[in-house]
Structures are given as structure tokens and as C-alpha cells.
Image (tube, rainbow, N blue to C red):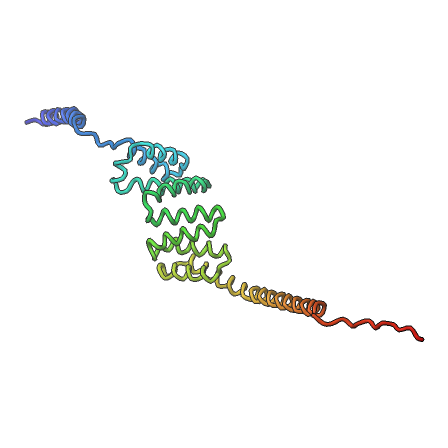
Length: 244
């Protein structure tokens, strides 16, 4: 067989392959998911690109669709709540993020990331005491959750509770030894606690002095009052007699 004939046969086979493969693909079952999953996947792409507003809109569309498949698709529904709240916080919409997180927690009440992120949103709104409660819920789900332990320490520092903050930072270091960020925070909290001690003692002394002065003042007033109200006989006036 001549070379030209071989090339002709190969060319014919190539043409047949080009025509057959698309036809076979057309007859295969589509691999597209339901609308909710498609919206979710698109939202994840937008989130990865940093387009948070678009991601939020797509997450909303996913949540507005039938989410049955998302519940069984490696917890895609859970990730939707997590990531939507994350996108909202990246835009500074902490109040809206709290709504998303609370909705997610109604579905997944023990998810540590939802609780941690709720704490972060509360912290960002200045609700430090509330954030500590949320961080504790996250830590209850995972005692070695370094991020939540660090965040709890930050909130306690804001509340001026340096000793508990130190405890939180030490727990974070125990779960992640050598963490430079935690080490720095622990050192700062220890310095703040040491600086606050003299102030606390001075305040205590002032309180004691004021209390003592109050007691002394009350005792003095009571003594004067007792002197004025003691049941003692008045001196009788003598009857002046006329001299005869």
C-alpha cells in the first residue's frame, strides 16, 4: 500500500471520528445539576474571585430554589450559609451576616464555624460579651479550635478581662504551639494585666477609704442624734416666791 493511500485512509478515519464523537456526546445523559446546585457552584466561583456582591446574590438564588440536593451534596447547604455570611462580612454587612448565621444555626446548631463567625460579626459590632458566648459555643464543639480561642481572647481583652483572655490565649497555644500571632497576643494581655493591677489596687484603696469615711460620718451623725433624742428629764423651773 502506497504512502498516499495510507494517508488517505487516516484522513477518512479522522473525519469519521470528528463526526461520531459529537453524536455520541449528544446522546449521553447531561451532567448538569438542579438549579440550586448550579447557583451554589456559580456563587462559589464568584466568592473565589472576590466578587462578594455577586456571590451573595447567587447564594440567595440557591437558597430560594429547591435545596434538597444541596443537603446531600457534601453539605452544600451548610457551606452556603457559611460562605454567604463570610461574603457579607467582607462587605462590612455584619448585621445581615448575623441573620444568615442564625438561619444556618437553626439548621446546623452545632457547627463550630457558624458559631465562630457569629462571634466575629458580634465582635465587629462592638457586642463583645455576646461574642464571647458565641465563641464558647464554637469551642464547645471543638476544644482545640484555635481560631475561636484566639477570637475569644480578643473579645475578653476588649472587656478588660485580661486574666480570662490569658487563659484563652494559652489554650490556643496549646492547640497550636508556636503560633506567633497567639504568642504576641498572650504577651500583650499579660502586660495589660500587670499594668491594670496597680490601678485596681488604687481603686480598691479609694473604695475602702470612701466606705470608711461614710461609716464614720454615719456614726457621728447617729451620736449627735442620740444626744438630741435621749429620754432624759428636763430641769424643772423653780417657782419664784415672793418675799414677805
